[in-house]
Length: 71
Image (cartoon, rainbow, N blue to C red):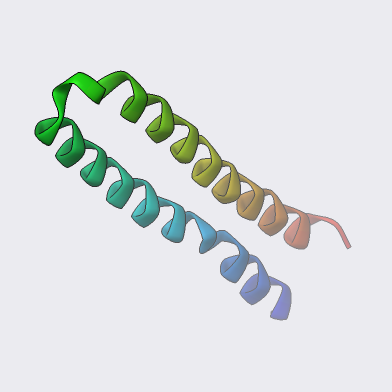
């Protein structure tokens, strides 16, 4: 029972990553709208940040699976 609760908590990292990526994307779109000539620099930083945020979600998912299936 407690392992299922722990796995559920570990998978909640996906929620934080989703919110973070959404906020970053909205701010990047605003920045590009204000300064279109800086689009390439903004896009590079956005992609790097989104990749790092998504990696934390994947790590949380893997930890959740490990908690459930490795005893």
